[in-house]
Amino acid sequence: MTPPGNNEHCLIAVLVGENPDPEHVVRWSRTRAERLQSPWIVIYVETPRPRREAEHSQLTRSLALARELGAEVVTTTGDDVIANLLRIAKQRNVTEIIFGKDRGASWWRRLRSDVDLRRLLRDSGDIVIHAVPVRDEGLSLAVVPRRRVPRARSTLPQYVMAVGAVTAVTLAAFVFAPVVGAHATALVFLLAVVLLAVVVERGPALLAAALSALSWEFFFLPPVFAFRVSHFEDAMLLGMYFVVALVLGQLTARIRAQEEAERRREERATALYLLTRELSQAGNLDQLVQKIVRQMESAFDTQVAILTPDSVDGLKVHPASTLQPTLQDQQALASALAQRQNSRKFSENLRTQDMYVPLGASERPLGIIGLGLRGPLSMHRQNLLEAFSQQVALAFERHHLNEISDRAKLLAESERLGKTLLDSMSHEIRTPIAAIKSATGNLAEFSVNSLQREMIGEIEQATERLNRLVGNVLEVSRLESGNFRPRLNECDVTELIHVAVAETEHELAHHKLSLHVPADLPLVRMDFVLMQQVLTNLLSNAAAHTPPGTAIELSAKVEDKSLVLVVADTGPGIPVESLGRVFNKFYRAPNAPTGGTGLGLSLVKGFVEAHGGRVKAENRQGSGAIFTVYLPLEATKTPA
Image 1: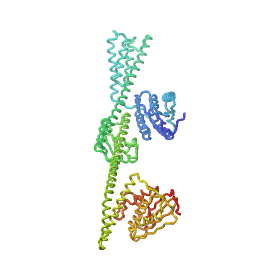
Image 2 (image 1 turned 90 degrees about the vertical axis):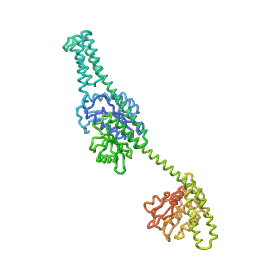
Image 3 (image 1 turned 120 degrees about the vertical axis):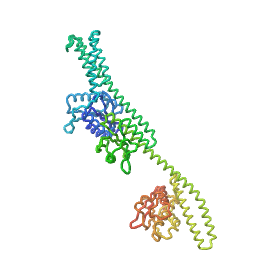
Image 4 (image 1 turned 120 degrees about the horizontal axis):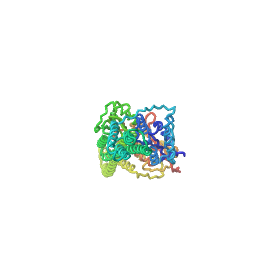
């Protein structure tokens, strides 16, 4: 079967734990997933079997490597590795399973690997199985030592307890064996093995089973005080007793191991539930960090530090933290966070045994969690820490998004109130402006000397300027409402230019205006009033930003199916840092004269774009600025 490619539902599963070289299998699987553009998961089945120290360390590195390379790590517990692997694979709709095949192992490990592989092929159904060869000569692999993981201190007392229990039952059996018989005594030994397996580990339980069988055969099975069986029935009974004792001890120990695994799963689920509940109740960042520290201290029984990005020092330790990293460690962590290092390499440059885990994998770093460790973390604790870090990262991200949302709502509400205020003021100001204009006109008829006429003229100019300002504000409000539509009609460009020049006659009185308008310009569909205001604002802007006596040019031409209107001056030009902002609302260049509002060019841009055109500003060679308007000639007529 050929696996599908480019399918978002195609998942690749990698079995880590039973593979001889899990890191090589993880890297091979990542390459396979990238080639198929498919997500991939790494499955680790934790069995009750104790692992060597080097094997445990290698598994930890492999799972961290898988997370670093973008895999989803799924951990579970159970005795049957293959059954759990297939169960998860079928639940997740996996299409491929990658399994490491050891070519350099002993015959016993090769045989067990072949059995597992045949079982995978038999029970996988439509899932494709890849057997990846490892431990090749071309691979540089470390030799795994045979040293076992150190046992817990309670193991030796458990062996002593097993020997003592068998000795006590043997002594007691000498009392009731003459009464119940030798064969019934075997049941007492068997009961002792079962009860002992409830309270001790697997090894002491198996030792108790073996010692009880030997004690029963030596002391109570005829001939006594000799390891010799005289009857076939006694031999069969001894063999069955030995097998039953071993099986009962093994099953009891397995039940205890499963109970321990269930207890760890319950502990993990409870810890995550409590953390999630506390995080959902946090109102601000300080409360969030306090709850994180409290829950992690309870779950890991250690001190906790929460470090967040800071614009000044790179990282800062939150005051709610109970673990205080040194200044050198903070600098090393800030450098590691800036370089987006993964959690496996995150604490390598630190001078402490504490563990630090980065939060989040996004472009913006969210922070760091630190744990003050007194020893290496178990696989269960590492998985719990990984789950905690993901939940904390989500909480930090949610808090950040809430802050952005609140700021956006505040900004939108402020802008809405500002628009409402401007609209209200603009309409209200129009009434007194009209009254002032009317009164000024009446006063002009009764003025008797030049001083009065001059003062009245200044009032008229100021009134006209205020009226234009209010009009600009209203036009900006119309543009931003989203309901603005120009009234398109066929207009004469030459007439448009002459009307705009007449409107700005007062502003252009001290400048040399030159017009370049061809006589054969076509009729253009446009809103005459709006385009008149465009040219008026451009001419007024040129007059306001150039010294008296300088030249201003206004030209029109047809180019590439567009009407091109150009307003150029010979003034100081536009500062380079202002070229990209001159059309922004309320923006005024640093060298702009007093009295402007920064709305004129914003209206120019809005009116031109409402026609489907565009406008650009640039500096001309030598000195001066050029504003160019492009209007599309969708439907034109040549005048007769």
